[in-house]
Image 1 (cartoon, rainbow over the protein chains, first blue to last red):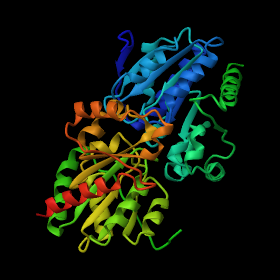
Image 2 (cartoon, chains in turn cyan, green):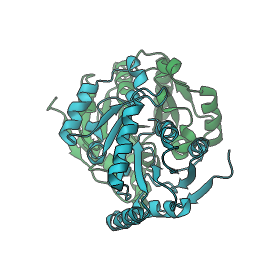
Image 3 (cartoon, rainbow over the protein chains, first blue to last red):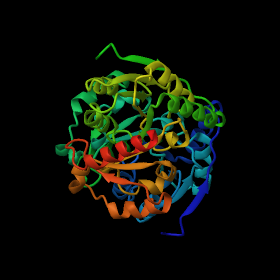
Image 4 (cartoon, rainbow over the protein chains, first blue to last red):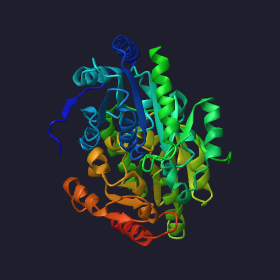
Length: 223
Length: 223
């Protein structure tokens, strides 16, 4: 365990105040020209593995920071730290999601003056994180093949609010009964035009399309 | 879609009142001699597939009912109905968990006078459901192999409060880097003596041990 990783305890706010706080967070990020990505997924969908490969693909071009939100532990922050990205661990004190106020506390602790991109790895949960705008420029959701293609039916808000859907662990598709066409049909009803990018964070298949999407979004936002 | 499945909207209560309500739910179940199982897991861990195989193994011995809790949809209730078990769909109105009051509403709607066992399939979520006693006789948690063995570090409460841990999709172990020994070490710190039962709800491997565990618990509770 790397004891140099800072751990910050953050506390939940009430939902009513969140949108106003999120607008402030977004304004502060705009001023600093820091692009914040809110990365959401179920437990075990591969958020951290995806981040490691993403950071390695982009770290020569952008200065990157990561906020790892967890109920407990710092195993993910230790993994991210190995990439050389600046990382802090946020502990949510039992809370099932990050909100805008918690995100501001995290950004203050991380220090973003010199950062081009910050990834917030949200709590592993398809319900609560979808309800809270944290002030991010873009929301990205990972659905992994073993979870099944019916998840948009059960957790519709997550798939409605997100800006990009990564289908991770596509290398395991032969083992699971995952119907990408059915998934596309469900998504079309909730969020037409949503980019759906199948990839494997383990072997890198499909990663170029995701990195291109992210670079384009960052550059369009800066322009 | 089977339109004969009843759908009940249930509403969340505040945490403070929950323990008193849970005690009442439990008392009512004791009076009716109905054994309630609170089944919890991440999205896509295999709750419904596990239930289908469990019901098929036990339906000649026990009269079984199921409450399917979801934020939306009734795809799981349709799947369960095919087993012949009595099933109702609960919609939580966006709530990330079931609580004791919602459970009582569900039991009233289901009708339990003639039921030996009721399974509550909780919302797919490793955080919030762990915090709410619903009045069940036993809590059962499923962790699936693709999620990874480190989940007890990140979601400790779930693995502390549960009475039985099923490790599902064990047939996919060759594809994933899942360390069962490491998992056992993490669990020993949180919940020593917790039964950890690897199985495959797809092909039935390891299912006998789970069915035996459940039968023993039901019979011990009745005695």
